[in-house]
Length: 110
Length: 223
Image 1 (tube, rainbow over the protein chains, first blue to last red):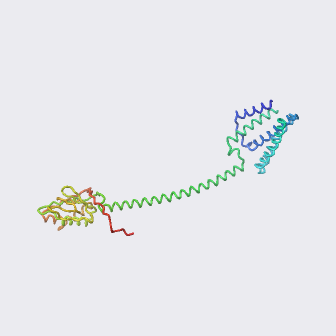
Image 2 (cartoon, rainbow over the protein chains, first blue to last red; image 1 turned 90 degrees about the vertical axis):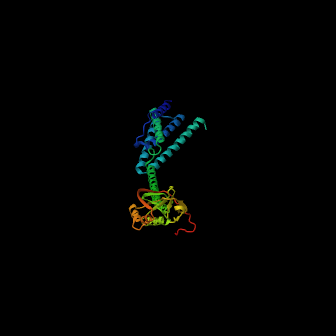
Image 3 (cartoon, rainbow over the protein chains, first blue to last red; image 1 turned 45 degrees about the horizontal axis):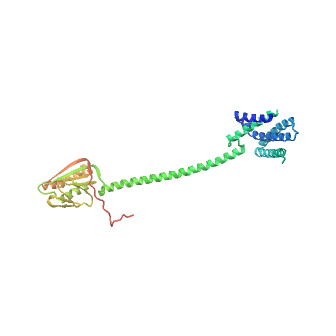
C-alpha cells in the first residue's frame, strides 16, 4: 500500500516539478526506467507468490538499474549504443511480459 | 526503502515521458540518428539550393527577354510615331512657321501654294497643314494635291478652302523663312501677283489636322 502511494507521489512530483533531464543522463534514463519496471513487476509477482523479500527487491531494483545503465554506457563507448540499448529493452521487455503473465495467472487463474 | 525506490521510479517515468513528448525530435534522439537526420537535411538543403539557382537563372533569362521586348516595343513605338507624323495620321507640334498668303488683285493660285510647299519641304519641313480663312485645315502629306477652285478658292485633297490661306509648318524656322524669301522665290512671286506673304516665327506650331490613313490594297511590305 505504501509502495503504491509512493509511486503515485513520485508521479505527482514529476508532473508538478517538470524538470529537464540533463544531457549526460538522457541515453540512460529510458533504459533505467525499463529496468526498474522489470524489478517492480518481479516484486509484484514475488508478492503474489508469497516469496517477496524486501532486501531482495531493493538489491534487484538497484542492480537492474545500474547494470542497464552500465550496458548502455559500454555500448556507447563501443559505438554500438543504439543496438545494445535495443537489446537491453528487448530482454527486459521479455522479462516484464513473463512477470505480467505470472501475475495474470495469479489474479485470474488463467 | 521500497517506497523511496518506487517514488523515484514514478518520478523518472513521468520525467522521461515528458521529455519524449515535449521534444520528440532532437533531445530524445540518439547520436547516430541525429547524424543521419543531419546528413538528410544537408542533402536536402543542397537540392533546394540547386533548385534556387536554376530558378534564379530562369528568372534572369525571363527578365532579360522582357527587357529586350520592352526595348523593341519602345523602338517600334518611336518609329510608329515618326511615321505617323510623316503620314499625317498623328498630330504634331514643334518650332516652325506660320505662312499667310494674302491675295492681291489676282487670287492665290494653286501653283503658288504648291511652290511654297515644295520650297518648305526642300528647307526641311517635317509636318504641314494648310487652313483657309474659315479655319478649315487640311494636313499636307506626300500625296496632297492642290487645285484652283472657283472664285479664288483652293481645292486641297478634295476640300475647298477659301482665302486667305495659312500654311502652318514644323521645321527649322530660319531655314524655311530664308527659303521662302529668296529673290525670285515664293514671296517674290506672290508679291509680283500683287499679293502678300506674311511669314511669322512660331515657337510652338501646332499641326493638328489629320489625314485619314490609307488602306493599302496592292502594296505589301517586303520581308
